[in-house]
Image 1 (cartoon, one colour):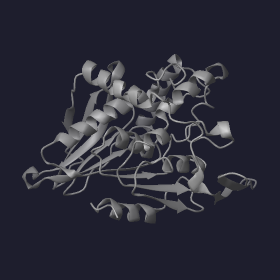
Image 2 (cartoon, rainbow, N blue to C red):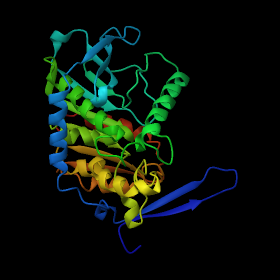
Image 3 (tube, helix red, strand yellow):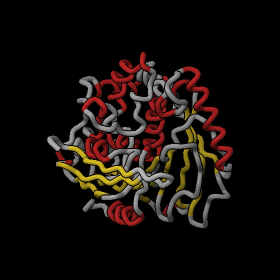
Image 4 (cartoon, one colour):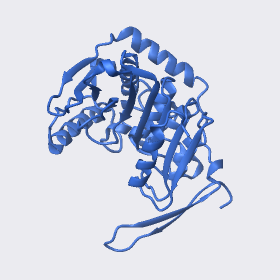
Length: 345
């Protein structure tokens, strides 16, 4: 190859899952296809300011005794987002709050319907947010949540038609403020800020860890919440959204390519404000990435575009050679050990 990137071998065997293998060519030199907009920081500063001024903080905690444990109290958390909507998450804290302060562990969900499972570890405060604007009752079935997701997709697609009815691509061609993730980003930031302010939280030990869509939100939140001390982003999505312009596979969800032909120009203008590679340039805390060389969902070139953009002086990336979008268990174990070390080595 004459330029930095990934050379891919794809073997298509009849009636057998495709086999993909990639090798990297100077991956440390890969850069996002489009530069950060000049008004990127002003846009998000103004967005936060307007949200804070116009929408009153209304954090609501609903106890979830069925998910609580002997040492932990677990709650469903919800709060108002833009447009009269609400977003939801799961929050846990130790019962013996007087023994604090405790580490705060933040996270976000991968793509797909909302869900609520067991949350937290003894001795930690944890908050994990969904990205959707519907309530998924604790204990609800995957089928029920899939139906809720289908309904949300249909409602958004009716207002913002695109090539497919998937929440992650809807609204971007209309305006930056109408993109599906816009309100989620602002409300998630507020939820995290609320958790950080709790008297039983150790402000010196706040970390975020997640995968794919959740990895992208880690970059969003670490840029918008400088209180975050350490970040783990595994195969992060929403990176290098204009990669197609330089002959690369754009990061999930192929945001611009998924728009109708007459909408692609406006989507191209709006997408950089949500490109996690641009948020990465504002992240200064210690960071660890994982990239899958055989990942066809969040392609390695797009992940490296974000990694190389990180402002952090303490960063490292695990190269999952032969790894698809499914992150290997040993990587999670390795990163979990790193995450729990305050010195960030």
